[in-house]
Amino acid sequence: MAMKPYQQLTHSVVFELEEKRSRFLCYLYPVTSREQSLMRLESLRVEFPDARHHCWAYVIGDPKQPITQAYNDDGEPAGTAGKPILNVLVQRGAGDACAIVVRYFGGIKLGAGGLVRAYGSSVSQALDHATLAAKIPLAELSVLIDFNFEAVARRLVARCSGEVLEVNYGVEVTLVVVLPIDQEGIFRKALQSSTSGSATIQACGSATIQA
Picture 1 (cartoon, rainbow, N blue to C red):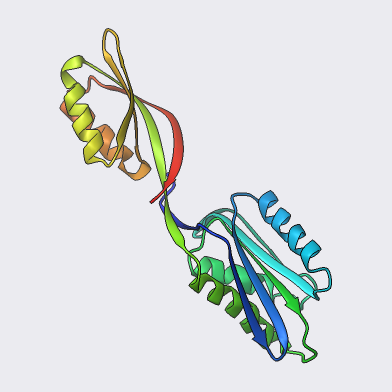
Picture 2 (tube, rainbow, N blue to C red):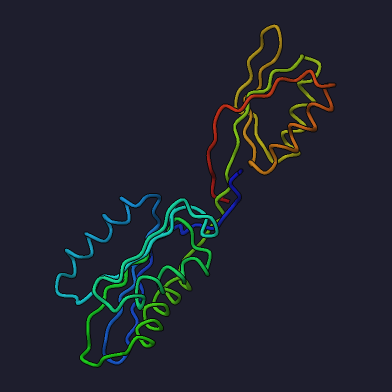
């Protein structure tokens, strides 16, 4: 199944929430792997060694269909910290994001419901200050066509919001093109129709861009 465009976190954000004298320091980081997320976590553990909890969650890829995701309550009652953090990332559509909430206990117990609200709210308010950008998956194609169809192929690439990366001239013309992956099927169908099925189209890679 082809990847679809999704929103990803672009910059780090820090937000602090105080609830009944407890401090909840939320750190948002753009990440693309579990390893990056755990490195950020370890860095905050070193920076705030006296904090009571370092709770976290991350989503890699599209929040609706993540490549991987995880969360951890770090000693808080089960389901009161990591899961609410993850839920906010998913509900707000923040892909490729890691949220770590450092808690300093203020002496007043919040109860399970209070913890869920505090952890979720700290992440939600941090996201209010964040920037999300569309991440668009791209398809890179090699197109072999007769010279007579080069102009047609170029027009179709442009119509599909694509770009010609490379051109090689031999017995026929080879174009290396890149276009949004959701336009690949449209391009293939239109080019074969325009060339009476004589075009040879092969996938040669994929990439992503931020819109």
